[in-house]
Length: 307
Image 1 (tube, rainbow, N blue to C red):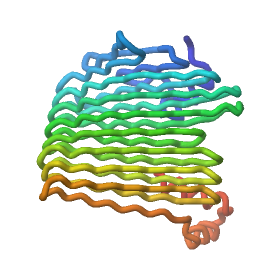
Image 2 (cartoon, rainbow, N blue to C red):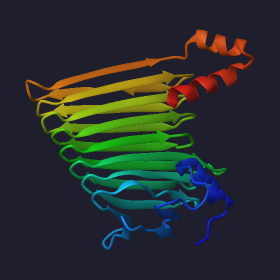
Image 3 (cartoon, rainbow, N blue to C red):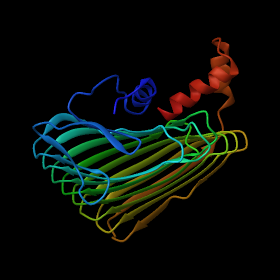
Protein backbone atom coordinates (compact mmCIF):
# COMPACT_ATOMS: atom_id res chain seq x y z
CA UNK A 1 0.00 0.00 0.00
CA UNK A 2 1.45 3.34 -1.05
CA UNK A 3 0.85 6.69 0.58
CA UNK A 4 -0.76 9.43 -1.50
CA UNK A 5 -0.49 13.22 -1.08
CA UNK A 6 -3.34 13.28 1.47
CA UNK A 7 -1.67 10.61 3.59
CA UNK A 8 1.63 12.44 3.54
CA UNK A 9 -0.03 15.69 4.61
CA UNK A 10 -1.74 13.93 7.53
CA UNK A 11 1.56 12.38 8.59
CA UNK A 12 3.18 15.80 8.58
CA UNK A 13 0.35 17.19 10.73
CA UNK A 14 0.24 14.46 13.38
CA UNK A 15 3.86 13.29 13.49
CA UNK A 16 5.95 16.06 11.88
CA UNK A 17 7.05 13.57 9.23
CA UNK A 18 8.24 14.90 5.87
CA UNK A 19 9.36 11.52 4.57
CA UNK A 20 10.62 8.21 5.91
CA UNK A 21 11.70 8.84 9.51
CA UNK A 22 15.08 7.98 10.90
CA UNK A 23 15.09 5.08 13.32
CA UNK A 24 12.32 2.58 13.95
CA UNK A 25 8.80 3.21 12.66
CA UNK A 26 5.43 1.63 11.95
CA UNK A 27 2.87 3.37 9.70
CA UNK A 28 -0.72 2.16 9.73
CA UNK A 29 -3.43 3.22 7.23
CA UNK A 30 -7.10 2.18 7.26
CA UNK A 31 -6.43 -0.74 9.57
CA UNK A 32 -3.49 -2.13 7.60
CA UNK A 33 0.27 -1.88 8.03
CA UNK A 34 1.89 0.25 5.32
CA UNK A 35 5.56 0.10 6.19
CA UNK A 36 7.69 -0.92 9.18
CA UNK A 37 11.32 -0.82 10.19
CA UNK A 38 13.10 -2.10 13.29
CA UNK A 39 16.64 -1.22 14.34
CA UNK A 40 19.38 -3.03 16.24
CA UNK A 41 18.06 -1.65 19.54
CA UNK A 42 14.34 -1.27 18.84
CA UNK A 43 12.21 -4.16 17.60
CA UNK A 44 8.64 -3.70 16.35
CA UNK A 45 6.59 -6.84 15.89
CA UNK A 46 2.92 -7.62 15.27
CA UNK A 47 0.79 -9.05 18.05
CA UNK A 48 -0.40 -12.59 17.43
CA UNK A 49 -3.71 -12.50 19.31
CA UNK A 50 -5.14 -9.08 18.40
CA UNK A 51 -4.46 -6.08 16.18
CA UNK A 52 -1.51 -3.99 17.27
CA UNK A 53 2.22 -4.09 17.83
CA UNK A 54 4.83 -4.73 20.50
CA UNK A 55 7.66 -2.20 20.65
CA UNK A 56 10.69 -3.64 22.45
CA UNK A 57 13.47 -1.23 23.39
CA UNK A 58 16.69 -2.82 24.57
CA UNK A 59 18.17 -1.77 27.94
CA UNK A 60 20.66 1.06 27.63
CA UNK A 61 19.27 2.38 24.32
CA UNK A 62 19.77 6.14 24.09
CA UNK A 63 19.10 8.95 21.64
CA UNK A 64 16.85 6.85 19.40
CA UNK A 65 13.24 7.35 18.32
CA UNK A 66 10.15 5.40 17.29
CA UNK A 67 7.33 6.74 15.07
CA UNK A 68 3.99 4.90 15.06
CA UNK A 69 1.40 7.14 13.31
CA UNK A 70 -2.07 5.99 12.24
CA UNK A 71 -4.14 7.33 9.32
CA UNK A 72 -7.84 6.80 8.65
CA UNK A 73 -9.03 8.02 5.24
CA UNK A 74 -12.27 6.06 4.84
CA UNK A 75 -15.81 6.62 6.06
CA UNK A 76 -17.60 3.90 8.03
CA UNK A 77 -14.44 2.41 9.50
CA UNK A 78 -13.62 1.57 13.13
CA UNK A 79 -9.95 0.84 13.74
CA UNK A 80 -8.85 -0.65 17.06
CA UNK A 81 -5.21 -1.28 18.00
CA UNK A 82 -3.49 -2.60 21.12
CA UNK A 83 0.12 -1.42 21.36
CA UNK A 84 2.55 -2.45 24.10
CA UNK A 85 5.84 -0.66 24.78
CA UNK A 86 8.67 -2.26 26.74
CA UNK A 87 11.18 0.47 27.65
CA UNK A 88 14.36 -1.28 28.79
CA UNK A 89 16.32 -0.29 31.89
CA UNK A 90 18.49 2.84 31.68
CA UNK A 91 17.29 3.71 28.17
CA UNK A 92 16.34 7.21 26.97
CA UNK A 93 14.09 7.34 23.90
CA UNK A 94 11.44 9.37 22.07
CA UNK A 95 8.18 7.81 20.87
CA UNK A 96 5.97 9.79 18.47
CA UNK A 97 2.44 8.57 17.84
CA UNK A 98 -0.73 10.23 16.61
CA UNK A 99 -3.83 9.67 14.52
CA UNK A 100 -5.17 11.72 11.63
CA UNK A 101 -8.69 11.10 10.32
CA UNK A 102 -9.90 12.30 6.92
CA UNK A 103 -13.59 11.44 6.67
CA UNK A 104 -15.02 11.93 3.17
CA UNK A 105 -18.46 10.39 3.77
CA UNK A 106 -21.57 10.29 5.93
CA UNK A 107 -20.69 7.40 8.26
CA UNK A 108 -18.42 7.89 11.24
CA UNK A 109 -14.69 7.17 11.15
CA UNK A 110 -13.29 6.01 14.49
CA UNK A 111 -9.94 5.03 15.95
CA UNK A 112 -9.51 3.45 19.39
CA UNK A 113 -5.88 3.15 20.44
CA UNK A 114 -4.99 1.26 23.63
CA UNK A 115 -1.34 1.87 24.54
CA UNK A 116 0.40 0.27 27.53
CA UNK A 117 3.88 1.33 28.66
CA UNK A 118 6.31 -0.49 30.91
CA UNK A 119 9.06 2.00 31.78
CA UNK A 120 11.68 -0.11 33.45
CA UNK A 121 14.06 0.90 36.24
CA UNK A 122 16.12 4.01 35.49
CA UNK A 123 14.66 4.48 32.00
CA UNK A 124 13.37 7.73 30.53
CA UNK A 125 10.84 8.03 27.72
CA UNK A 126 9.12 10.99 26.10
CA UNK A 127 5.86 10.05 24.39
CA UNK A 128 4.13 12.54 22.07
CA UNK A 129 0.65 11.83 20.68
CA UNK A 130 -1.26 14.20 18.37
CA UNK A 131 -4.84 13.88 17.15
CA UNK A 132 -6.39 15.66 14.19
CA UNK A 133 -9.59 15.41 12.16
CA UNK A 134 -10.75 16.78 8.82
CA UNK A 135 -12.70 15.85 5.69
CA UNK A 136 -15.59 17.12 3.55
CA UNK A 137 -18.11 14.51 4.69
CA UNK A 138 -20.63 15.03 7.51
CA UNK A 139 -19.64 11.77 9.18
CA UNK A 140 -18.18 12.09 12.67
CA UNK A 141 -14.46 11.83 13.36
CA UNK A 142 -14.02 9.96 16.65
CA UNK A 143 -10.82 9.27 18.62
CA UNK A 144 -10.79 7.32 21.90
CA UNK A 145 -7.24 6.89 23.22
CA UNK A 146 -6.49 4.81 26.31
CA UNK A 147 -3.02 5.09 27.86
CA UNK A 148 -1.79 2.79 30.64
CA UNK A 149 1.57 3.60 32.23
CA UNK A 150 3.77 1.66 34.67
CA UNK A 151 6.76 3.68 35.88
CA UNK A 152 9.29 1.58 37.77
CA UNK A 153 11.81 2.66 40.40
CA UNK A 154 13.85 5.70 39.36
CA UNK A 155 12.25 5.84 35.88
CA UNK A 156 10.66 8.84 34.19
CA UNK A 157 7.88 9.28 31.66
CA UNK A 158 7.01 12.50 29.87
CA UNK A 159 3.56 12.20 28.33
CA UNK A 160 2.42 14.90 25.90
CA UNK A 161 -1.00 14.65 24.25
CA UNK A 162 -2.38 17.18 21.79
CA UNK A 163 -5.76 17.43 20.07
CA UNK A 164 -5.18 19.94 17.30
CA UNK A 165 -8.72 20.33 15.89
CA UNK A 166 -11.42 18.58 13.89
CA UNK A 167 -12.19 15.74 16.33
CA UNK A 168 -15.95 15.54 16.86
CA UNK A 169 -15.94 13.25 19.88
CA UNK A 170 -13.20 11.95 22.13
CA UNK A 171 -13.11 10.02 25.38
CA UNK A 172 -9.55 9.98 26.67
CA UNK A 173 -8.60 7.63 29.51
CA UNK A 174 -5.16 7.74 31.13
CA UNK A 175 -4.00 5.69 34.12
CA UNK A 176 -0.54 5.53 35.65
CA UNK A 177 1.25 3.92 38.59
CA UNK A 178 4.53 5.45 39.71
CA UNK A 179 7.01 3.55 41.90
CA UNK A 180 9.74 4.81 44.26
CA UNK A 181 11.67 7.80 42.91
CA UNK A 182 9.76 7.48 39.66
CA UNK A 183 8.50 10.58 37.88
CA UNK A 184 5.55 11.30 35.60
CA UNK A 185 5.07 14.58 33.74
CA UNK A 186 1.81 14.74 31.80
CA UNK A 187 0.65 17.61 29.62
CA UNK A 188 -2.67 17.58 27.77
CA UNK A 189 -3.52 20.29 25.23
CA UNK A 190 -6.97 20.32 23.73
CA UNK A 191 -8.98 22.43 21.28
CA UNK A 192 -12.68 21.89 20.58
CA UNK A 193 -15.01 23.82 18.30
CA UNK A 194 -18.42 23.52 16.68
CA UNK A 195 -20.51 21.01 18.62
CA UNK A 196 -17.58 18.77 19.53
CA UNK A 197 -17.30 16.93 22.84
CA UNK A 198 -14.18 15.95 24.78
CA UNK A 199 -13.95 13.96 28.00
CA UNK A 200 -10.62 13.29 29.69
CA UNK A 201 -10.26 10.99 32.69
CA UNK A 202 -6.81 10.79 34.31
CA UNK A 203 -5.88 8.63 37.31
CA UNK A 204 -2.34 8.68 38.70
CA UNK A 205 -1.29 6.53 41.67
CA UNK A 206 1.92 7.36 43.52
CA UNK A 207 2.80 4.07 45.16
CA UNK A 208 6.45 4.45 46.19
CA UNK A 209 8.60 6.71 48.36
CA UNK A 210 9.65 9.94 46.65
CA UNK A 211 7.47 9.22 43.64
CA UNK A 212 6.23 12.38 41.92
CA UNK A 213 3.73 13.43 39.28
CA UNK A 214 2.65 16.64 37.58
CA UNK A 215 -0.52 16.68 35.47
CA UNK A 216 -1.23 19.81 33.44
CA UNK A 217 -4.25 20.44 31.20
CA UNK A 218 -4.54 23.47 28.90
CA UNK A 219 -7.65 23.69 26.76
CA UNK A 220 -9.70 26.00 24.57
CA UNK A 221 -13.42 25.50 23.92
CA UNK A 222 -15.03 27.47 21.08
CA UNK A 223 -18.54 27.76 19.59
CA UNK A 224 -20.91 25.27 21.30
CA UNK A 225 -18.36 22.60 22.17
CA UNK A 226 -18.17 20.83 25.54
CA UNK A 227 -15.22 19.68 27.64
CA UNK A 228 -14.94 17.69 30.84
CA UNK A 229 -11.57 17.11 32.57
CA UNK A 230 -11.44 14.73 35.55
CA UNK A 231 -7.91 14.29 36.93
CA UNK A 232 -7.44 12.12 40.01
CA UNK A 233 -4.18 12.00 41.95
CA UNK A 234 -3.72 9.35 44.67
CA UNK A 235 -0.72 8.97 46.98
CA UNK A 236 -0.30 5.85 49.13
CA UNK A 237 3.32 6.68 50.06
CA UNK A 238 5.40 9.75 51.01
CA UNK A 239 5.17 11.23 47.51
CA UNK A 240 4.48 14.55 45.79
CA UNK A 241 1.97 15.48 43.11
CA UNK A 242 0.35 18.49 41.48
CA UNK A 243 -2.62 18.93 39.12
CA UNK A 244 -3.25 22.15 37.16
CA UNK A 245 -6.18 22.81 34.82
CA UNK A 246 -6.21 26.04 32.80
CA UNK A 247 -8.90 26.71 30.18
CA UNK A 248 -10.13 29.45 27.87
CA UNK A 249 -13.86 29.45 27.17
CA UNK A 250 -15.38 31.24 24.17
CA UNK A 251 -18.78 31.82 22.54
CA UNK A 252 -21.40 29.41 23.96
CA UNK A 253 -19.02 26.60 24.95
CA UNK A 254 -19.09 24.69 28.24
CA UNK A 255 -16.12 23.51 30.31
CA UNK A 256 -16.04 21.50 33.52
CA UNK A 257 -12.90 20.72 35.49
CA UNK A 258 -13.16 18.35 38.45
CA UNK A 259 -9.71 17.74 39.97
CA UNK A 260 -9.43 15.29 42.87
CA UNK A 261 -6.48 14.62 45.17
CA UNK A 262 -6.42 11.78 47.69
CA UNK A 263 -3.65 11.33 50.27
CA UNK A 264 -3.41 7.96 52.00
CA UNK A 265 -0.10 8.55 53.75
CA UNK A 266 0.65 11.29 56.34
CA UNK A 267 3.76 12.46 54.44
CA UNK A 268 2.12 12.75 51.03
CA UNK A 269 2.08 16.26 49.50
CA UNK A 270 -0.61 16.86 46.90
CA UNK A 271 -1.92 20.11 45.41
CA UNK A 272 -4.30 21.17 42.65
CA UNK A 273 -5.50 24.32 40.92
CA UNK A 274 -8.07 25.03 38.23
CA UNK A 275 -8.95 28.16 36.26
CA UNK A 276 -11.46 28.83 33.48
CA UNK A 277 -11.71 32.25 31.88
CA UNK A 278 -11.97 34.28 28.70
CA UNK A 279 -9.31 35.94 26.59
CA UNK A 280 -8.08 39.09 28.30
CA UNK A 281 -9.21 42.26 26.55
CA UNK A 282 -5.86 44.00 27.02
CA UNK A 283 -4.12 41.18 25.16
CA UNK A 284 -6.43 41.64 22.18
CA UNK A 285 -6.00 45.40 22.18
CA UNK A 286 -2.21 45.16 22.34
CA UNK A 287 -2.01 42.80 19.37
CA UNK A 288 -4.51 44.79 17.34
CA UNK A 289 -2.48 47.96 17.86
CA UNK A 290 0.39 46.06 16.21
CA UNK A 291 -1.67 45.68 13.05
CA UNK A 292 -3.47 42.37 13.57
CA UNK A 293 -7.17 41.96 12.95
CA UNK A 294 -9.30 40.77 15.86
CA UNK A 295 -9.45 37.26 14.35
CA UNK A 296 -5.69 37.18 13.85
CA UNK A 297 -5.12 38.43 17.40
CA UNK A 298 -7.38 35.71 18.84
CA UNK A 299 -5.61 32.98 16.85
CA UNK A 300 -2.22 34.28 18.01
CA UNK A 301 -3.29 34.20 21.66
CA UNK A 302 -4.74 30.69 21.36
CA UNK A 303 -1.63 29.31 19.67
CA UNK A 304 0.54 30.72 22.43
CA UNK A 305 -1.78 29.39 25.13
CA UNK A 306 -1.79 25.84 23.74
CA UNK A 307 1.92 25.73 22.91
